Image 1 (cartoon, rainbow, N blue to C red):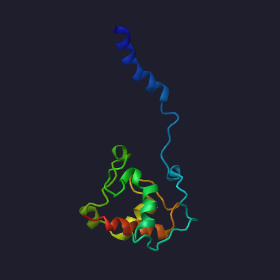
Image 2 (tube, rainbow, N blue to C red; image 1 turned 90 degrees about the horizontal axis):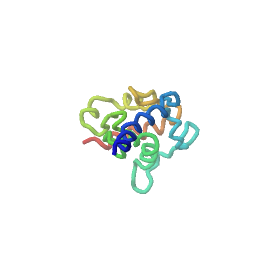
Image 3 (cartoon, one colour; image 1 turned 60 degrees about the horizontal axis):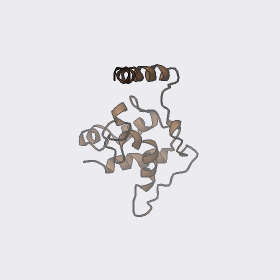
Image 4 (spheres, rainbow, N blue to C red; image 1 turned 60 degrees about the vertical axis):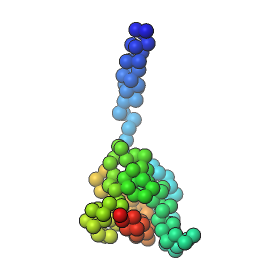
Length: 135
């Protein structure tokens, strides 16, 4: 019983020491490896009766891990980064389309810049998608 307790107490310490911070680096947009780059065209033509279909695809691959599928800040990485709720009325009222586009392009706070990975048409489509979520 004592040996099991000792192992249970020592295991987290051993794991922490083995993992160390030496191999960690800051997350970068290219870590997603979504295939959406500045040379990849994005269609802004509505498909399947969804005017935001192309933006949803980009958002799903680049943004949803933090912001969640509907931009509510509830993605799987949200606990770590605490991203903005893009559907919140307060955020929607406080930011212009140009400010939203600038945040996507140049980054904001802990959010990385996606300007190198997305064409301007994709950024505009993302802004329209974000605006469609206003509550």
